Amino acid sequence: MGKDHPSVKPMQRAALARATGCNLETIRYYETVGVMPDPPRDPNGYRSYGEDHVRRLRFVMRARDLGFSLEEIRGLLSLVDSHNQTCAEVKEIASAHLKDVQDKIVDLQRIERALSDTVAQCSGTEVPECPVLDALLD
Amino acid sequence: MGKDHPSVKPMQRAALARATGCNLETIRYYETVGVMPDPPRDPNGYRSYGEDHVRRLRFVMRARDLGFSLEEIRGLLSLVDSHNQTCAEVKEIASAHLKDVQDKIVDLQRIERALSDTVAQCSGTEVPECPVLDALLD
DNA sequence: CTTGAGCCTGTATCTGCTACAGACCTTAGG
DNA sequence: CCTAAGGTCTGTAGCAGATACAGGCTCAAG
Image 1 (cartoon, rainbow over the protein chains, first blue to last red):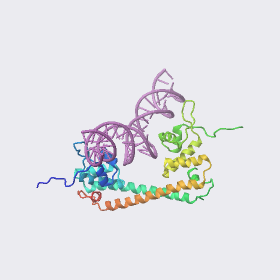
Image 2 (cartoon, rainbow over the protein chains, first blue to last red):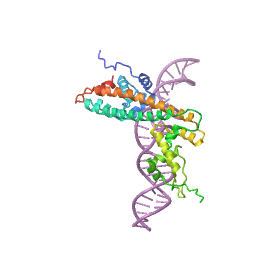
Image 3 (tube, each protein chain N blue to C red):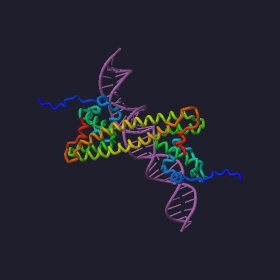
Image 4 (cartoon, helix red, strand yellow):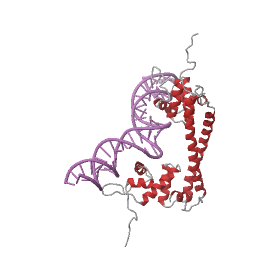
């Protein structure tokens, strides 16, 4: 019973999209930009995906959810693929990204305060004077 | 003493860029997308800007700083330009944008927690086990 | 007159997708 | 068997919001 079966039947692009919730076209895009491998093809030229591809795509999607750029994801993946990544290397990428996120939060909070302060002064009535415009003008 | 002088000498594109801190090419871009007017031209075809343009560009830049999209800015400007804007209309645009900002802050804070929790588990050492990758993989 | 700087235009590049056109291939129904 | 509907293939265009660069003009100084 030598089974070298992939244990799951291969799927096409639409099936991978359904399995992961990823947009159909985005999958092809991820292949062209190198965060997904070029998949094997059926004799008719159709892409044939297996469980590996599902896991890989989920990794990419989760990392994108966390705001990693495709560039950063390529970095993480090359560490994974080389099999000689260290915790320190991965931590460096993730920490740098964490700092970006934290900086962005601070920026947005500053914007949020400025905007809500300004909006709070609005009468909301049908008058042509407007503190929002006054704030944006001089 | 009939003075119809613009009270300030006109300037060229680079001078407007310097006066506002805006990137030179971005000024032309703002003209093509309609948040800045097509300026009058000198006989040689050079753009000629006055104080109006400085104020307008500052308005656009401040609104961009606050995260308004160019589309939203076009909306605000058409209200300003029509001179029949009401506080209620402007408040509507600003409030909608404020909500976007607040939503984005919540999203980023969720990401920030997930990332910092994960990074905190890193040994940061030369070992191949990495909780960041474990979190992104299954 | 020459040289270099500044300006002009159109177009390319970037990120991260999304969508569409036109050509294949495959499958089900009649 | 033929046809029609649907899936897949490729290349390409489009979105925001800039930024950059190439190849021509023009202008002022030396």
